[in-house]
Length: 407
Ligand code: ZN
Image 1: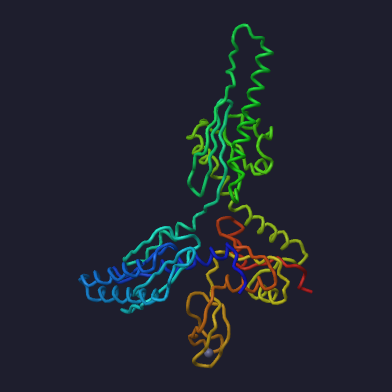
Image 2: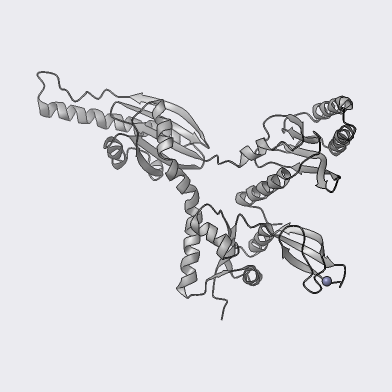
């Protein structure tokens, strides 16, 4: 198995959540258990046994039996587990309504993309997915700096949370000079004081931003033209200076200025998320019209090129909801692999309903093929025009090739 990239792990994880979200119980009988790594397993099993005991008080007979058997199922799964994995584990189990007056006892074990923080037991008519959904929201970190000539505040934006880090004030004299001072001398002193203050801000902000792992960028706010002077003067460490994403007009330079800055920069922040995806799509579109035959799309062409090892970058839509299924026809005996939507398909030869014996998400399957030949894989959202186009006009699967295979 090739090593899954973080994007791919996240994609798989998101698909799993989507799958679990579709499931409903007919009563309050779907159980979710969140187990952190440091939770002692004997504690977990004794708590679950206690729930098993209390379940005998449930009034509805089928709900009672279903809850009890779900708990039995979980307990038997945990019997030989000595410790939860590094990031913890989440177990979903219960009698899922499968329509036609039937239920099916299902168990799903999920290793989350971020550590489980606290133990939770939850029984409801749906699985409890909120903590997992939270893990999918962006947690990238940005540096924040608001300043004028009197005051500066440094903070961090982590995901959606703004954190205050440090505030500084200056001794820069106001514009009004004292009597007896010459105007030129006063101006000079003032400029020296501003220069000192900017140097101090640059040093402290850099000290805060430099150790942040994967700092995406830095946002700077303040009144004009002070913030522009600060940026132009390159007072920040050169590694941080490179990461400045923009300057925004804000009216406060204290802690409340940090939130104001985040509000003002909202569009820019969203743009950054899409920038990389946009670049990939731009390149694809350019190749498509260049006549060099280095862009291709459609499942069949992509499969052929992946087999030849000629794909440089595989581009797939995140919204592609297709399965690669191993199918069998009970009527005419046809057997093979088909790409299907939903869980059913009909035989190409005799149009009888096919039996699906194995199925895998197409995105994951193609990614595996791609990684065998060292191709890059880019997952593209539909949140921008070209991304939507990839899904609707190009069937959600495209590639940029290493060389022209169309000769
Ligand atoms: Zn058939």
